[in-house]
Length: 89
Image (cartoon, rainbow, N blue to C red; front, side, top):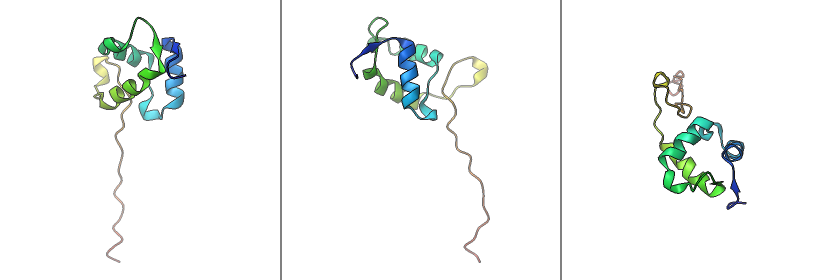
């Protein structure tokens, strides 16, 4: 299955099915990946062997302001809450 050539849409569906929410992609992100990593892609053929490259690219992809109309992954910023200290009781 890892060397099966499939279409872009099917690749995106399978990638998102197998990925956690933080690493899921959109069609626009996949197009951006295709443009930036052109040597990895031969013609319009997609293979599951590209998935590790896509994942590593998504991890280092900077978060860009949505006003610039650049498609990026969702923010992974964690919200931390201050809880009362309990060690002074």
